[in-house]
Figure 1 (cartoon, one colour):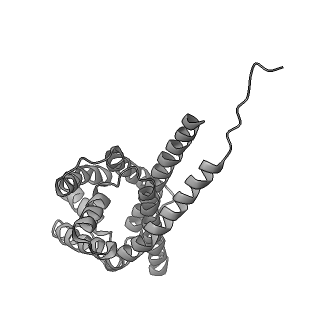
Figure 2 (cartoon, one colour):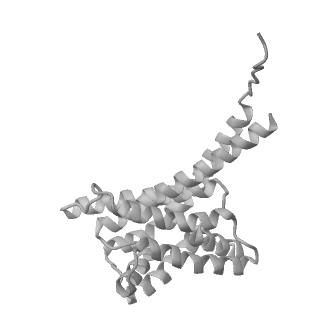
Figure 3 (tube, one colour):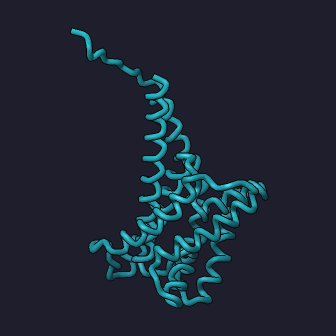
Length: 223
């Protein structure tokens, strides 16, 4: 019974992790497709894409590797397996969603702005879902959590500060900066601040329900 419970916990953990990454990546691409300015990290990725080539998802992976190294250095501990899986999966998911034919830029400003806001909300809650699995935060979120742990500042302040610094570098590289970028910088920290504890409580409730679920053993040799 203990082995079955442990297996169920692992299934829930990794399912939550990858579902969260998929949702977060969808939000990222919706913000890009809204064409009102990308999020700061994607301003950087797009800027690198314009200057050097490759794909936006590829630069997400490459930049993520260096950010993950910095986070490990600050905390003086090796990252979890989930951090590496996050780094690779998000890059792949971004390129995948970028090729989805029905994810197109709306014709009107109102349509673009609605798409931007939905992308921002989806991005924030996708982040909250995958972090709640405790499988290892991704490179950017690992850095956010590392700085939060070291400084004891609120997560929304840390996240907002990170976005502003990255935005400046990305803009200098030619990444797209517009009103949507400002909305993201102001909003993502507060959404993350609300989403993280909500998603953690939801995941903890699922764990408790899983622990209370009776395991029925079937005797295959009975008549």
